[in-house]
Length: 377
Image (cartoon, rainbow, N blue to C red; front, side):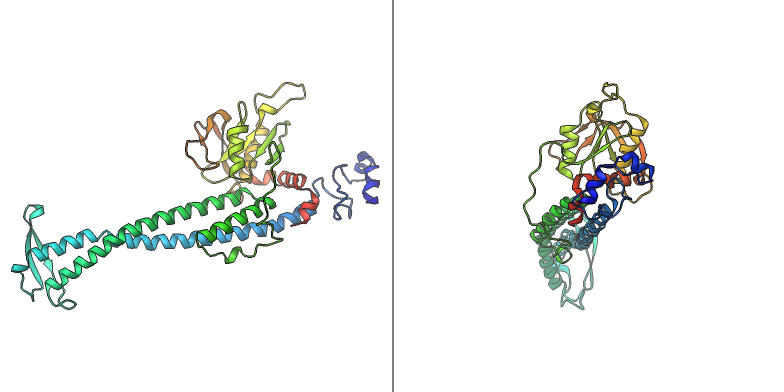
């Protein structure tokens, strides 16, 4: 504590002369790591690195559980589709049995084949083959065919319902996976998602072994924190001083895109993949001259695109195609799920580079959580 107070009394300019480049806001009196060394970046990198490493494992745990569940659901659906294909044969099987029974008067009991007419098709000639190895007569085989056809027809309705249920489960798993990707580096968000996903897994009777117990201290079952008024998501500042807002989950994405963004704000999102909604908030920007910004600079646009790439499922890609448009072209379709919006007009694309903003993302995370929060993971 004394160490930190002494530093506050030293001019940043003096520190800079000694190669320390330490701002007054760089140190936290409650953070032991911050008081161990002069050479700390403004965001307290050791705290952030420890925090990110911890929740990185936590995130991988959730993604692994979701990926395993999605793979299992794919196998289940493939099996159901095979059953559905077999059920589709019920009509043909019933038709065959009907032709046999309607022509039994002229089919010998020991016949292996018979030629009959299908009057539903205008008297078309049909060749019937019989399996006398497994059935004693064509009549017995026809009766067995009727029984199997009835069973297949009853099963068909059940299989269709199971396929619809499987599709619903898979869609929910995909949505949860997108939520985890959006909550990248957000410990509180991931904890809340853990509780939500665990509850959902139990309700859908999916395996929860990978999810129990959660990593770190278990706060997943605690009541969510009451949201402070205003924007609670990620917040950045562009090179020109324009606010850049980034959603952390589907709720924040929808709030940002539908309620907060307005002309002349610019809206960003990666193409063809889940990701955060990003808004370059020109409507709130003010130049040094006091004149509100009405057009974004190339550097501002690039930073927003980089952030959209960073906070997306494509983060590990070196370069990511990012769409942008005016906020007025973004809307929510009637009946669409939470966080789903449409872009009526794409004004252009920018190649986003996630690595360009990795340090800014770490700084923002540290500022918003504080060192004590970072160490708690």
